[in-house]
Image 1 (cartoon, helix red, strand yellow):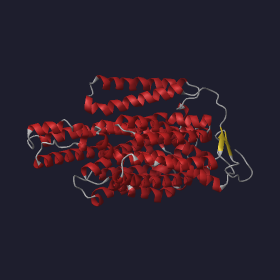
Image 2 (cartoon, helix red, strand yellow; image 1 turned 135 degrees about the vertical axis):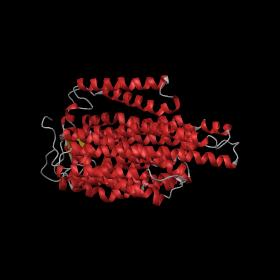
Image 3 (cartoon, helix red, strand yellow; image 1 turned 90 degrees about the horizontal axis):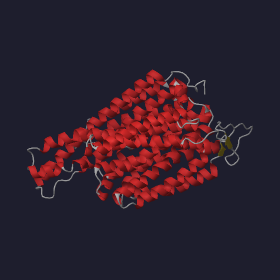
Image 4 (tube, one colour; image 1 turned 180 degrees about the vertical axis):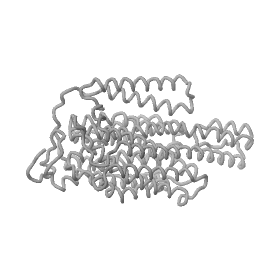
Length: 529
């Protein structure tokens, strides 16, 4: 869009995906506020969910695998459909798609709050993931379309900082609601925020008129992506309980491999694919997405198990567990806008090497605490170092992704990068769940053998799928119950350490990817695009 004067939001119009020129400062602030609230709804829900998991597991009598599905159902649909959400925004209008995501997310949140069984909750979480898939790519695409290139780095930094603040408030409020009322209130807080976001978007976000679509929507790509990701997640989530040779697990793995091959084939043939492979010719864009995959696999997988450690092993309340990551969020809030300007001052490579390297050190520190560790001496140092590393990396990473594509592809690029980060978390939770169980089981068996009577050991062993939520049999004496609880906690910590060290290795690998693929100077779109 090209205009000669500064336009307020109700007169501004974003056309054909081109960045806005002349939109007034107040309009930009409203767009930024909508982007922050929209992405925060999706981000906060993930962090609150981790805090509420122990209460959900206890209230609904869920197994460890079912608890994973409460998280994975949301993340699976969000990850698989983010690409479709970005493409829909580019085709149908970013504002219109964003509004649809708000409404769907709010209704699904209400259904989650009213769920009476774990299966109802998993179904509602799936619908919630579809709504989030429309919200998240639209948030970044609105910023990219409204702010000129010279202002995007600080804008993305502000987005990251304030999204971090809302992500900090969410677990605190959610944890307090879980302790004082019920886990259902962790979902019930979403609809009022959605109503506020609807008002801001309808009243203050400029409408957009994308260029007419020249080809049909890539529905086949969305279906194949969902099947591929769903099959892989099912296989890794269910393998610890059913075994890798179980027909259902083998079938899911076969579905994942077949669907992945079909997805690649469909994307190569479709005239307007969800993943335009031409974008991957840009070394910076492809490198940034590989970096995202590795770094967010470590982050999403590692932080999924941290609240379980804090609540079920260390004995913290849900409120205290929600506050445990507050230093991480505050560090990101304080530093994110500064980090957003690092690309202009020092280039993209330096912060994208230094940030993940520091994050790796933070994960390694989180592997140190044992059973009964103090939060201040055991967990806080790792949380702070991890927050510092992610602060340095997040805004420059977003800036590189959006700078590496032409403006008309901003929605697709945002969708791809967000999908990569979400896919990383989905797969990491599934794989790390298998890894933790693989370490937990032998440690638990060894600790129980010879420590408690065989019948009690067998009864406890039968609950191993609940991990740290395992309860001593009712017939156990106080001494035997104490021994079973101690063995369970020690076994969980052993598995948790394996998870944290794996996260550290993934973050370090992402730093190497940045060094090898991200240019030191300015990042530009591929000349062929």
